Amino acid sequence: MDIIYDPTYQMTLISGPATKITGTKRISVVVNDPQKDLIHYETRFRRTKRRLLRKRYQSADVVLAVSKGVRDKMIKYYGLADSLVRTIYYPIDTERIDRLLKEPSELLSDSNSNFNVICSGRLHSQKGYVYLIEAAHQLINIRKHDQLQFHILGQGPLREELSALIHQLGLEQSVHLKGFQMNPFSLIKQAQLFCLPSLFEGLPNTLLEAMVCEVPVLATDCPHGPREILKQGEFGQLVPLKDPTALADAIEGTMLNYDKWQALVPAARKRVEETFSLKIGMQKHEELFLELHG
Image 1: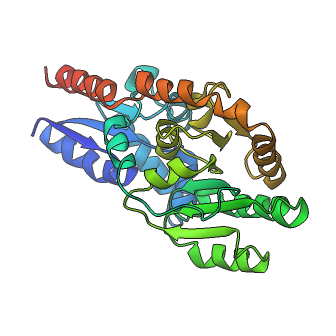
Image 2: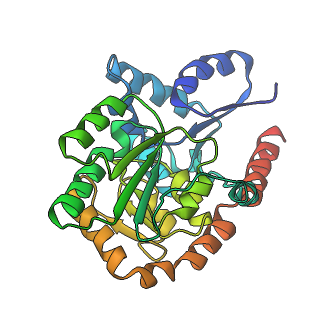
């Protein structure tokens, strides 16, 4: 084996000592904000794991971040040398998405008058769905936008809690937990707006995929990824995180000025093709592998 490519911090904890013994080259990949990853996903021995991870990352041949924001946070949080940490964006297979978009799909809504907002991701506190549901409450129950329909794709540990909140707010007819979807793209394509309400990310693939599906996008300005992808709002909207009112205002603004946001769709797709494509990502990975192997 010439190179170990460990894609999670859990694997980094294991592969670090192993590659030290064998002398194998190692690339440690970081896909999320490292500090928030430990806070949200580790409940025991957090300080010990951080100390061990710092050593593992410092001993890697390359630490590979999926966004510039994650790279900057890795350098700061783990005290890594600038030269050790690089960025290669996670590649998006636009051709595969285009193929899946042609497959038959269920109808997202049975009414052409509905305004459909869609999200996709694991039902976990990281994804901020509680704030989106609270925004839906403001829009539907208070501002009386009855044409709004919210569709959340995915499964995870928060399903029961989110279902209870939807019931508590009387939103059973307007907010739908649609579970895991083998082909989410044909559903995303039917929506009028894709929303990413996350509290933190690394490089949110679902946001990039929605841009490929040519749907207007709205995302929280969370660390890290959305601002980098959307170029400070040039290709979609950014709102503060953990703010249901800001989300509601942005969704309402999209409804009232839909032509403005729909006009960004072609340029948004082109940005993914030119910056985050599979071809570009694979080429950069190949160059990195050859550099280390040589």
